[in-house]
Length: 198
Image (tube, rainbow, N blue to C red):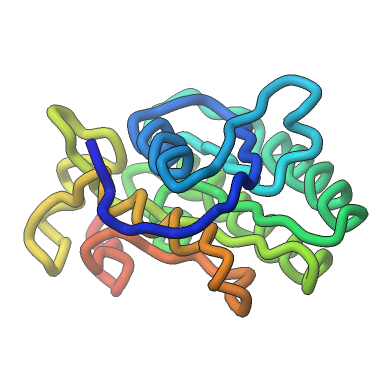
C-alpha cells in the first residue's frame, strides 16, 4: 500500500500510543517512507511526532479516553520543553457526529476530541495537536466505522486506507504550521449531517 503524498520529515522521530490497526500501520509506513524514524520504549518520550491510535470501529474494546489524554499531555510537555512537536489523534468520525446505535462509542470519541482541543489550546504555539476523524473505511473488511454509515455517505462509497493516511501526512507536514485543534473528517461527508439517522 502506498500513499502518493510526499512530505519532508527530515529524520523526525515518530512514536505510537494505542493499539495498532490497518490505518495506523499504513500511516506509520507512509511516515517512514517520508524520512520519519519510528522510535519505541524510552526513546518514544523524545519523539517529534506522536500518533495516538484510538479504536475506529464501534464495539472495539477501548481504553479509558483519559488514558489517551494523559499520554498526549505527557508528550506535549516534553515537546514544549524541546521547543516543538506534533500530536495527531486517529479516532472515529463519530467524535464529531454521534451515532444513535453506538452511544458509548460516540461519547468516548467525543471525549477524546475535546481533550485534543484542550491540548491544542494549552500547548500552542510550540506543539500542534490535531485529529483525523475516520469514517467508514474498507480494505477487505471494514477497518473503521460500519457498513450502515455508507447509506448516508454523500460520496456514496467507503473510503480507503490511503485517503485516511493522506490526512495524517497533512498534519505531520513541516510546511503545515498554522493548523491546530482541528479534526479533519475523512468520512466521505458523513459528518455533514447524515449521522442523525443512526
